[in-house]
Length: 161
Image (tube, rainbow, N blue to C red; front, side, top):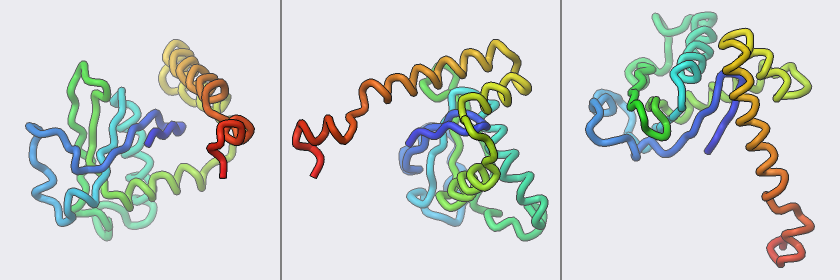
């Protein structure tokens, strides 16, 4: 699954594809590896923002120190492998990633995502990085607009039932 939020771009897959050869943190966790997602990003800022959103919210509600419901299940540790397709990877309980998405959606106030994130990224990362990210978003949007079959195309090809 690909997700783009104000925090960044993430690719999420089943936790059991955790790369071999990395520290075996999952063995220390109470959950089975299948109950985790492997959240991946191309830049460390995206991971830092994801963690900060969760931790800032939890601190407002008796967070990580006491009552942190993911204690023993998640440390927020990020493994980095420079030069790989997703240089930064983190195991995260599925429910916790769901909480992250809920926080993103519950705070959504903007009318246009592309405009909002360019402003956010420019403030945080500078105009050059914001422009690069914006171009990636626009290229992706255009690819889906032109290549993703509409209902009409699917009906013509017998794919819409």
